[in-house]
Image (cartoon, helix red, strand yellow):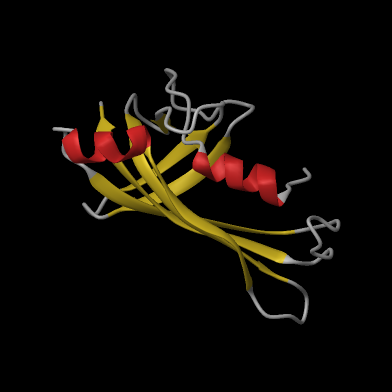
Length: 141
């Protein structure tokens, strides 16, 4: 499967799709998040909305994102790491983060893959790493 920097970033930023069942859907990507309450969750991501809930694999629960922060780094073969993008995205421009009465958790996530073709000026063999955090609330666990 060909993964580009743009689609990889979009996939990690889109924690999406609450559907019944405990298996990942055929068009979703699995991701593991480690939360500051000591919990670890495997979730699937799919869909088109930045703040759509992600399904917790093995339960009927969802993770509802409120904010994301992420750094994307590309390391060409034999080269030094280059920060491609970093930033924070707040649901409702930050209004939801400050006014949500539900208990919140901060969860970290990461992913690494190697480019098999040149993309955005980076040669094949470039290692792309995504590191980020999502502030969210967990429901229906």
